[in-house]
Each structure stands twice: as C-alpha cells, then as structure tokens.
Length: 135
Image 1 (cartoon, one colour):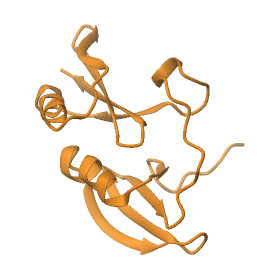
Image 2: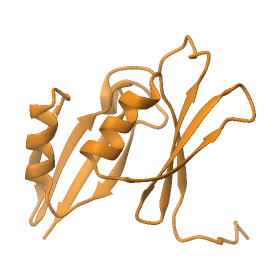
Image 3: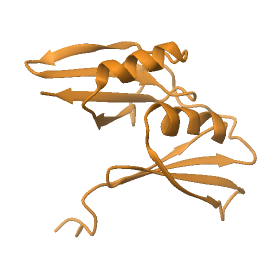
Image 4: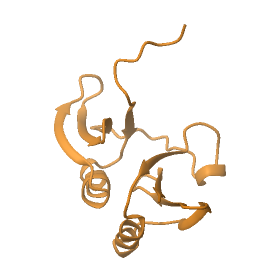
C-alpha cells in the first residue's frame, strides 16, 4: 500500500552546532528562504525553518550541542544519509561564491553526463550538499 502523500516533497532536519553559522551557509550562500524560527519543544534550542522550493529545511541548533558528530568522508565515508541535492540554474556562480567565502568544494562543477553538471559543497557541520544543473 505505501504512504499516501499530502505534499510533493520531503522535509529535512539537520542538527547543527551553530545556528547563525548554518544560516549564513543555507540562507545567505545557497539563498534558501528563511521563513521562521521556533523554539524546540524537546531538548531546548531553536529550529530555523527555510524553504527550498516546496521542501522545508529545518536547521536545529540545540542549547546543548550533541557530542557525537556525523561520520566524515563524504560520499564514501559511511553508510546512511550522506548528501542531498538542489537543482539550480547558476552552479558556476554559487560554487565561485562558496570558494570565495571559504567553504570546501570537493567536487565540481563537473559534467556527469551530457548536459548535466554537479558540484558538492560542504556545510559548516560537514554535511555535503549537491548542486545539480541540467541544460
């Protein structure tokens, strides 16, 4: 049977060490629309809510930062959630700005098949975000 969807996209929650630093990456660099902040009802802290199309990106900054970090190493570093993809029309511009601001860009932009290019950018907490441009 499966789930009966009520929305055409998913929401994603990212636990971050520093909410302001993560907003600088997701809001200011990537340009996601910061729609609201709300207190976290469990564990204390703040959820910064941003929109990427119809996907809600929830940046959760707890008052007490968890000690355990996500496994490093990018795509081949571990199993589990390793990256997520944003489809864009200005990959070169975003990658250039990311590098200028000191963010690590381990991949690309590179053509992976005719008319499709990707780049990977690492956020302040070590999470990988893939940019995909299709022409």
